[in-house]
Image (tube, rainbow, N blue to C red; front, side, top):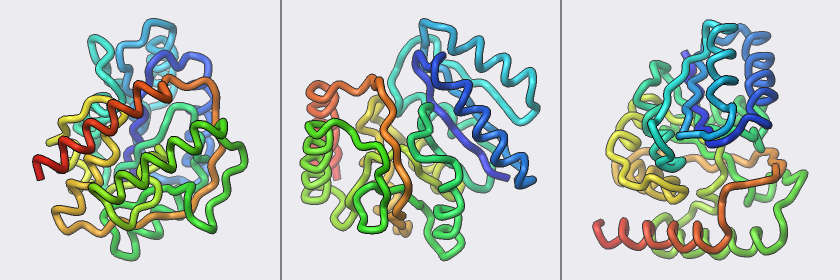
Length: 232
């Protein structure tokens, strides 16, 4: 079975369409799956949408944090609840279409323990780009991550990642980064365990708005990267 984990913070506008797209794609494929929606302390109608989806569809489950903790912590809670043989984490805006899942599953079938969607490879297709300042900041961040932590991985921050279940439970079970800097941490932990990480070119479409602050979030992520490297 496939587990899909989506962290959500104030996503009442985008979440209904995302749920519909995932259900339509996987139901028509007759793929056994569970969709785990994690409410990260939302203050809007996100939880109502989640509960309605769970009542309508037997494959949908809801987890909730009592208050906002951050994307990393919400994903850790969702992964802990996952029962699937493979665990897909994806964003509530579905910037990478669910149809790209086949590419990541092929990588796991070929021996990877983690397959990460990438916007940075030659075969990647960015159909709707971020504003140029975000693109530049993202490239600088990934160069730093390569130099300090994860050489050879060109895009740690794409939100579309597939894990073998044992790897997912291991790396998220020991996660210390609550916020947006969780990606380098889980990949670093996987690599330290000797897990093969496959970077897979995917389709990606930027979806606005975003809760990621270009300055504050970037500084926070860099702090976590440096701390993780110092801890070894």
